[in-house]
Amino acid sequence: MASFSDDFNRANSSDLGAGWVEVSGDWSIISNQLSPGVDTGTVILRAAGAMDSADHYAQVTIATPAVASLGVWCRGNSNISTGYLFRNDGASWDLFSVVSSTFTVIGTYAVAAAPGDVAKVQAVGNVIKAFVNGVERISVVNTAVTSGTAVGLRSGTVSGIRYDAFTAADLTAGATLGVSSSVEAAQSLTGTKTAALPPAVAPETAQPVTGAKISTLDPATASEAAQALAGTKTSTLGTVGAIEAAQPLGGSKSATLGTAIETATAHSLIGSKTAALVPAQSVEQARALTGSGPVEPGADIDITVGAPHSPWSIGAAHDGGWEVGAPC
Image (tube, rainbow, N blue to C red; front, side, top):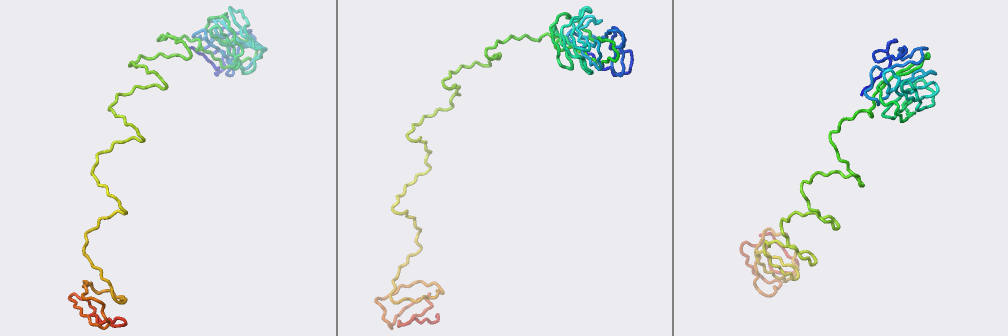
């Protein structure tokens, strides 16, 4: 894709440089802008380099307009006598097809040029379009000029006309496409597009669907016997570890008693209330009492006490309280 641009930001000179060919007139640079000259009629300027294809655009900024021809070319020949021209004459914008210097208007946008307007013309196939400040104003189908790669300007020479910022380039829509690397078969659309499936890795048997799809089960690793349910499911009990005899309960549970250490015989008490004794100083073994019948008051009682013996001495029974002597 070819492209060319010039902002004219350089010293004043009547020599535009190697990028331009002055087809007619004496163009010059004044104050960083392009001037077509004065009072020499209509003049033509062409970019020295050509575009790569006939599908391209060219545009220029009209810095200072005047009531004169102010135009930009595309798809031109070497002397710009054939091509497409978009120009303003001080009253309206007109799009021309030009064949051997014969101008034919093929579209119009009736607005006068204003300072700073950007004029653009492009050709892609048989569709020719014109833009002002980036807005499409004219679009026509025209086959008068089908080839040409030159771009440039056509202008009157009224004093004060100035141009700025010229650009041109091929359009991607007109680029030549490369050869395809492969051929694909078109797929018909019935509802949605069907994509080609890759070859199957392994064949599968289709499963009928009744309610829900049945999936293939893996082989069983063990067989289980079904258990009938009568109320609740019966589970298998493990082997008993020990046998226990059931103990009947009659009233309350009898605890096993330990072995008796000694046996004591209870003795009845005969006589009056015994006074409280002071704590014993030592433990004495109880001795059985021999004899029979009640003891009369004042009767002598013989008691033989062997060792060990109680520290207390007992005298004859008498009325009143007991006299206790000193331990012996």
